[in-house]
Length: 225
View: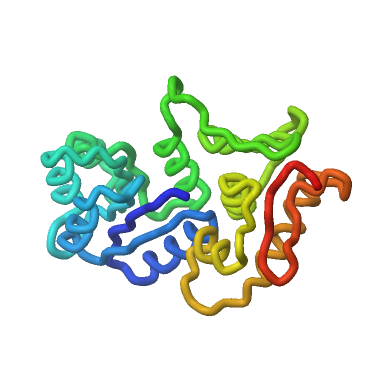
């Protein structure tokens, strides 16, 4: 699960983006000033930074420059209303990897994030499997018997969590904390909905039974009974 940092001082925009990104299975931290955002970004625990250009404290441009000066390589995407060629050049020269102009379509932002998080072509694929199902973390693809199966971000995250813990019982509370990033009392019935969806999309027969229910406890991924 990728960990993002959003540095945005407009509360409405920050709430909208955080909610949308979390629904796509990203973990999102939010800072509302350039100074606070820089402090979090310097920790180096994020996979990607979304930075508004105009911020109180330090501007997004200054945040990016300081990160690069301290050799923090985390990808940066600027979110800004500025759109002149000079502004674009200034952002790239400060060390940004990409630049998206406000207002933007959320789907476009998602695709730009995916591009920045895509691993190098020469990187060895990280794969997990159960029965005839293969999940490729590197390419974010799932295949069954060689046929690619389209999953939502949350379905993929749930399947990945179960396969990473193959042959081990995953308790419901552990699943909700790690896949949904919810750390308080919550109705875990949502897990059942997603498990049923995975079984249907992956066409898991009763004989295969790759995703098994452990009543009253949780679920387990294993190669049939």
